Image 1 (cartoon, rainbow, N blue to C red):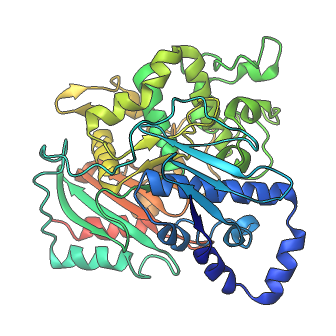
Image 2: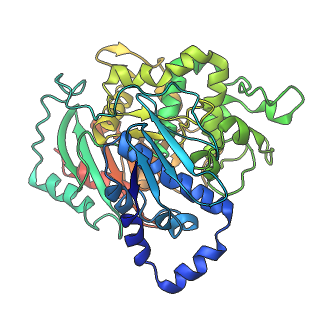
Length: 451
């Protein structure tokens, strides 16, 4: 058992003493429990999925997190058990610690307080980060030899400074044009085979996976068994959910789902419980719950065996060997956020999207599904880019060519596709706090730097 205190205490020392004194008594047991779950989840996934060190995780993944937890997390001690591939974090002497457990091929699951085992089979193999795939790009890693122009080198370099957002922290960039990697660069502690959390890029992955198996059920009521006939939520369709048009209430704008992400609560316990506050299909409101429910409905519609195999049916064919989709402890994929992936794997995914769901000459997505994902339908965001079915829609208003689209997530995760230029741009970040990376301007500058 490895006790990891030093890094957390060092971060605590950077907080003014007055803030420390005020913060600790005001943090209730539940808030400390979620903060402990946050640290357990990020340590578990960072160490066992990505091969990161605790010190690196403290400096990147756990820096500038939600203010609710930012002062609490550094005071909590993480116990990393490399033999059992688990992390536990105590938060209250009267209660068991928070625990996250890793399983090969499935990543980490956060258990409820006092939970002793996940529903998955325990790992028999020690964690290991896969090496380069000897197959040629894009299926593998051979043949990648970026030769960026001086102009493109300069643009990419600015992404690692403050050129596209004060306070941002870029950890990876890859530029793919006509299927060829033209530029690739990483920040300290990262590289081609080091993953980090996709956050809401996972929503676009969810839309893609649903297209593989359930594309024909878009206009039917979502298969949520808790919403029985007579329940007004029974009218919510899968299409409504994919387009953030469910009409469901949630506790915060943007619908933070901390209890599911870090608290050991499950999708089928919480996400199904919110009431309607608008008619389905009449209001756009960005919500984690909508995507969690879309994936949960897909689980009920396609059956357990197909559901379990769902991530592999995409990641395997595309050669996304460093990508893992994680679940809650009831086995629900948390595809609104909880996927760990690398810049190269996301570039493969962007290339797949740009090829209309065809890979190596084989059609994987139904014809027309990418059009569904990238076409606005129904209510739209009040400002900024538009929204399709799990994709953000860009164009001339954002300084980009018509029909550009992106997957994007918290802390600066972006997969931008510009079909008219056959261009895919991936930017991975660990942007702290309110720092925001200007993906539209960066993508425009990258496009301008190319022939």
